Image (cartoon, rainbow, N blue to C red; front, side, top):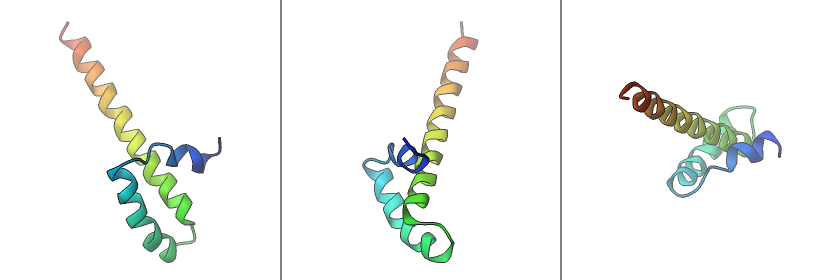
Length: 64
């Protein structure tokens, strides 16, 4: 699985709508493709999800 496919894998529902709305304008103004913009947005949402889960686990561990 290449980086573009990996980044786009998490784009479902409202996240996909955000990525679709942003990808075209950003790609036109930069030297990246629509797919690369969508992959970057997918990676950002993945990182935010990982941070959320890590914080929840940390909070759970500290309350024990």
